[in-house]
Image (cartoon, rainbow, N blue to C red; front, side, top):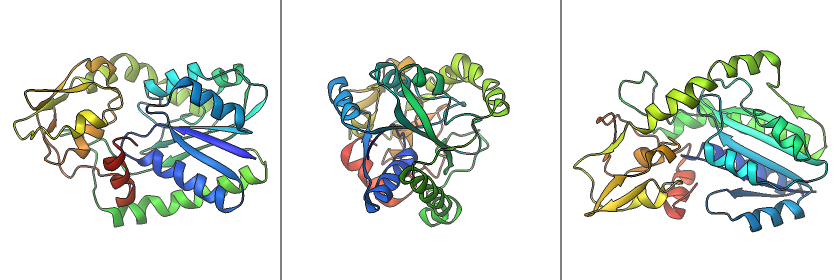
Length: 276
């Protein structure tokens, strides 16, 4: 069996789960590959899907919904015939049916949902005035989130290897709860958040934010970062959290501590590769 797992990750939470799951499967003799959708072209993605015996998709949850780039990726996915499907999402607390929100659309394309799971991970939504705690303490992340996440990864990997269905949170109750959040975020919340970002005088012109932005909404003007086409912004918070001098503001303010990924290894990988 061969699994190709496509994922998008803003600040590393989804990347962490995707790579740990694939490593766990590979250790058991099941070939698995985690692939970021950032920069991948349609031809390469289709070839990977054609050569895989199972397909995985993973995303972070924003307002009980998927980020727009993952929706676009799913829309472009090829039609297949009864190919097993894995989906999972990362979230702060609860997303309703976040792991299976695209289930019907994918089943129309011939993907058969076999595994679906939600993973609670540290909060990366760091904005002044928002009553959510932020942390850059990797030891705290390990103790509070990552140990539990890896246990769930082991259970999920075992189900995949044994070809045993493992679908969680796919209930009418969860869907109804999620539907109460999705319209607000889609039509109001998302636009509100994306317009909050700005750049203060601390900017050194290092270009890191522009290079890392998954939707190319940051460019350099006179050696300073500037936001353009903010309607395309995913509000992934990668630019603000990973800015080395805290020059990215939200509502003209900077909140500390910034989120530097779930662990140091993930943070360094994103900084080095300029993508998650």
